[in-house]
Length: 604
Image (cartoon, rainbow, N blue to C red; front, side, top):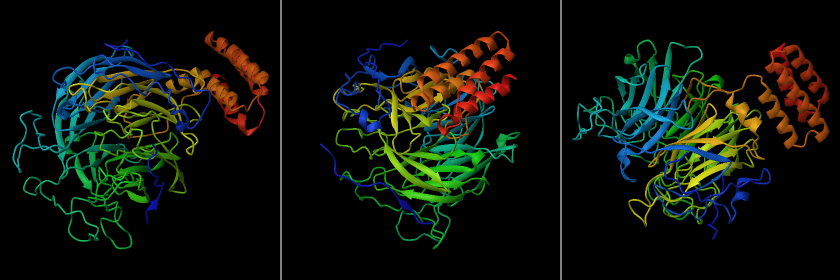
């Protein structure tokens, strides 16, 4: 299957701890495309540098709490051995991964999370995922040890070295127990859990290894190959494949690699390196060399949506769409490329799986890529509609506030916010902060909330000090973020003209036992008054109902809720039926009518 190019190339245009609040709430007058909000008076522009304390700006997003890193997970900004990385959730606990191990926060009090326990286990980059009582943890660095020791594993070959996916029993969150993990030829940069609806006894782990290939003397079967634009059709090179690990839930210690699919193969020639093979020295549209290199020899990160049988692969030089109905043998359905994208980094489907967003980590996350000279299609999100199994490019989105050359900034990890009838995600932008985006119309994404801090100025007052948000995820009504240098953040999304309190409440009614951003399922709130009122707010916003009718519907729903709170369901249903009679059969009011009927059915 041939790659489909997208995009274009253009020339550049000219209760907090120790916080200084400089920003102001910025309320936009309507749903305008994201680029339209990038005005000179954006409060994110020109924030005062600082570390602790910091300056900040926000719109419709409130920082409830920041928990700074503490020993043995703290170090000056820029020390990569101790930075926070990705994030997973189980119950009232957030698991914060990092290059030195993981930390578990009790988030039962959303305004004041408490560090519950920590586990030192170096090896980077420490991406965590949870499933039941199991924690999976990515390790790629050569210092990683089987015993989780901090002394490193020196030498080209070391039998004590661990590079792969660690597995922990976290049935006692205060005392995790390491189980035998799975050693891999390129280690594990990231991994994604994949469920099989037809196989409840096992969980599958899709591994993406981006580091160097191990010696076969250290791990049998590893075979390094040189990157080339010539077809590679022989041998069994470690490059140009991913790893699929099968984990028996009753015996996770028996986890093993069950396939290594060559999902980049050219079906015409059989070449393993059948997609993008850009080599060092090629120039990015900015005029500088691509960094990282868009050379598709593995995936950086993948996002699975098992209930619809799809996976989105962000695979260095390409964005892929895979059929994972057979998790052991994924099949490539489509592949796209874009000269504006330096490094296809991560992906996120819409809540119903009909759209997909890919990020470009131009600069590798350690560089300033949101400067005034950086075009909005560089280091950005690319939005696609999925039509008949293929991805159709719609637009780019980039956090619109210009950042300084002292701030590492580029698109990074995100998750869906399950507002009924809308496609919204929250996303981390390193030192570009947090951006909440409506991409219901993929051709016109709209920023509806943000939070940003000023540049970190320690330990180098004049240079770039690594920091910012690695991940920002919605979980059970709040947004949580892993700040590389400053610790663990908790945010509350606030009501505005762009997102009502009813819409936020409806999204918050979706309560999960566990959450991994890269393992998706459709999140739908049960019928409720909040869902009905969210639908009403949306119909009003779209001007699909006149003001008098909307007022009558709202009054009837309010009366119904009061009756339901008293246990008078019959009276509540009567009021809701009155509301239904106010609604017409136009397409614009269809979702409102459906929400009313579903609530009536629930109360009857």
